[in-house]
Length: 132
Image (cartoon, rainbow, N blue to C red; front, side):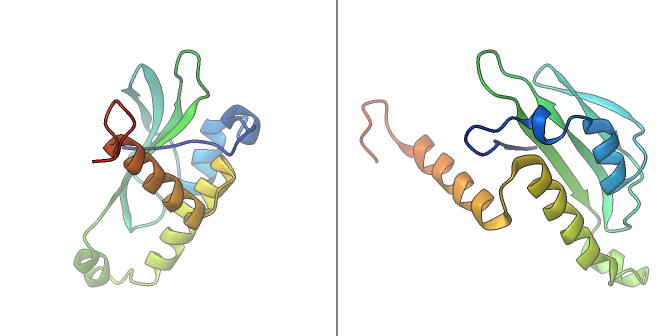
């Protein structure tokens, strides 16, 4: 499961006031919910795009902090997708993921990667603030 934060000064509930409808719009009918860190996330067990096997997405609430978007995209193996004749669906799957994450976070793919790199670098620092 990956968690994404919003741009400075923005909140997930303002960017996506109806998470359930937005998840359905991008990926298909919601089949249920799944608990993650105390929050219920939406599960799409049979996504519309054949590249996806299962999708879990929703807001994770943290006490005293802004909500984060939590998402897990389970994809079928590429060889299986191609064998089933759905190779063209791969491009649509990438677009759907990127468009959904951009709408939710306000960050494009490059900005999200840079943010994840900074998080990893911050985690690598020792308690006294000196990098290892």
